[in-house]
Image 1: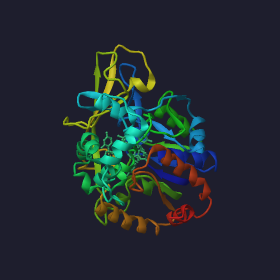
Image 2: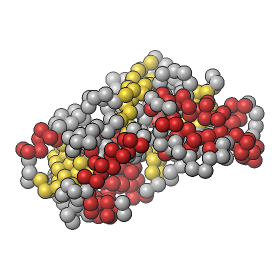
Image 3: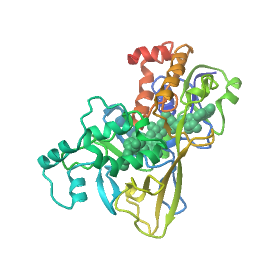
Image 4: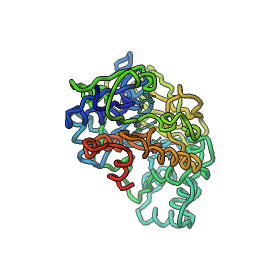
Length: 379
Ligand code: FAD
Ligand code: UDP
């Protein structure tokens, strides 16, 4: 008899398991469909000794002190601050847009005031941007939109940016200074020995059992438990009764080349004509010494079957409406909590997933169902 059954050994499920076992003394079983723990944060050391992120670059960043401190019990950190370059007009330029970007594009110095004046003339007056295109042009105008956002977003999502929710591009700021960090959170880093070494430590507890290579639906009748934490796709929990929710998927093409370094930053974005969106060079994260270097090219594609990796919930109105139906239904399921990127159908960063795992302790001793969780969160 388990107190909790957790579906999914991604960062959400692992944090929930760790909290329930360590802080509340609960007996937990974690069921994972894949042959590894870590979900999309999974990393491994390749045959050349380089630490690689299987499902694209994962940089940990957070403003939540409690999240950082919780994980820091299980790992030390490489103090990495993420700086991205975009390959535009045959040069590597700073991204997100800041004073340096304009200087690199126009090959001349800009003061803060000059940048403000330039952007003021460029931007399109739209009070409430309704889609991902309007979000960018209202903040910086057509010129920068065309160079940095239009093609990248079209490649990334496979549709015109006009069809996407404004939140998609709102994630990317514009800065009127020389701050070229991708994230401005006070806590940033890469786990010293990788995410999976950290996850293994989080799961190392006498009250936690992990079952891999198993779809929970095929296993759940064989065990008994009091409560469920579900971190898988919410539509599948309900047997797709309102239809499947769409996802965008990436083909992660890994490659090792005989060069010490391939590019000047860990991540270079390609907003131009090539079919990939980003190239990651992992050695920049770890500063590892090697005559070879490991790269990952991200080629966006449609999500066609359950075998494809679930990368991004699709931010269009019809999908969000369909999700609301599942969300409503989830409130009626007793003793079950739905958390994480797939169960909430929401573009969550890792720290927000950890936060959800930590929050479980606030209602795990109560009836612990989704309705209660929403009440707790004020949703
Ligand atoms: P997942 O990692 O998807 O885990 C869910 C698990 O449930 C999976 O392992 C799945 O196999 C399992 N599962 C599903 N169905 C079943 C079933 N029926 N039975 C058993 N198990 C099941 N975030 C950041 O903070 N920083 C970054 O730099 C960053 N980069 C990213 C780059 C890319 C390309 C992508 C796609 C995401 C990135 N993220 C980043 C987001 C990060 O990956 C997510 O926040 C995180 O992985 C979500 O964790 P999760 O546990 O909710 O979901
Ligand atoms: N984006 C873009 N050009 C870029 C980087 C991002 O147009 O060079 C857009 C794109 O639509 C992307 C969104 O901004 O989906 C959010 O970018 P982010 O880098 O946060 O995406 P993620 O790392 O989650 O893939």
